[in-house]
Amino acid sequence: MMTVDLRSDTVTKPTPGMLEAMWSAKVGDDVYGEDETVNELEAKAAAMFGMEAGLFCPSGTMTNQIAIKCFTQPLDELIADQTAHVYRYEGGGIAFNSAVSTRLLNGERGILTAEMIEPEINARGNIHYPNTSLVVLENTVNKGGGKCYTLEQIAPIAELCQRHSLKLHLDGARVFNALVRTGDKTVDYGKYFDGISVCLSKGLGTPVGSVLLADKETITYARRIRKVLGGGWRQAGFLAAAGIYALDHHVERLNIDHQHAQIMADELSKCSWVTDIVPVETNLVLFDTEGPADAIVAKLAEKGIKAGCTDAKRIRFVTHLDVRPEQVEYVVGVLKSL
Ligand SMILES: Cc1ncc(COP(=O)(O)O)c(C=O)c1O
Image (cartoon, rainbow, N blue to C red; front, top):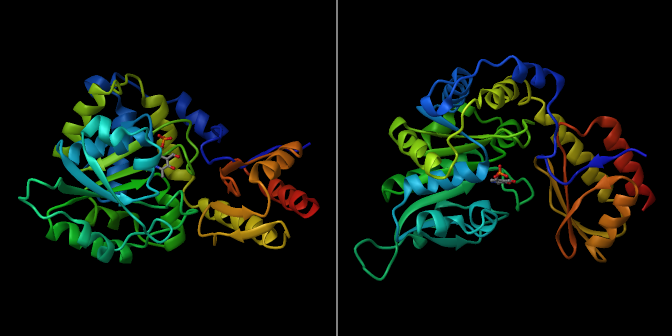
């Protein structure tokens, strides 16, 4: 029986080319700043996004949490959509690491606008209010089924943040999926954001890693925070080499994952037991089931297809580097037979 893992784009294994790049990486002690492959990855990612500097970290959670620490003071407040990963899935880290409160908004599939944000910015100088200091956007929106912001939508939010002296951070765990879909230029992102977190271990297929991008001063402080969190690593160049390889070889191909997601959504739209499908934009397919979602997930598992429930009646399929065309065909066949 064929097996297909659609639970997440984090389940990929390194390709032979990536393993070769890792194997031959030149490494050194990164805490001393001496790992040339880490330095190369940080510089490369920063240049790609039009930012000054980068910091390679073990996870997207760490790059997001360090960014929040850098851009806030205790007793501040940040604004994010109610579905935001930084709020829902980072273990309460905003409060724990930064002593900051969170103002949650109801975006359209997680997409915020300047009009939604502006009335939620607290007036300065009133001791009753936490000091609003940061806005966090997510692109693509995970809980929003991979929905994308375009730079045209981001520009007015960045302008608002500047006007109110707020920092703007991007949780770009899947920012390359958004870039491939929208056709926006990577280098233009730096004009709008103070911080960008870019995951290498999701759509790009590395075993581990995320890069935080910002200006030099912020990254100097971020490096200190990473150390405090125990994230000062040594010969991390073996992992950075996978990141460089992924940036060179795994970005354009994300289109294939998007096509695969659309093929699955098209088949789901013909299934009588599916009541709704969130329109597909990138590599995430969210759909609602008539009966309990876990019963469908169990049936899929019997056929070798792994998927996850995100709600009592909602299932998520995620396409990625390790889902090949023949596996997509197999999934379509199984959906027809259910
Ligand atoms: C939108 C988003 N941000 C951040 C993260 C955190 O990444 P990590 O699992 O590397 O901590 C994830 C993980 O799935 C995510 O989906």
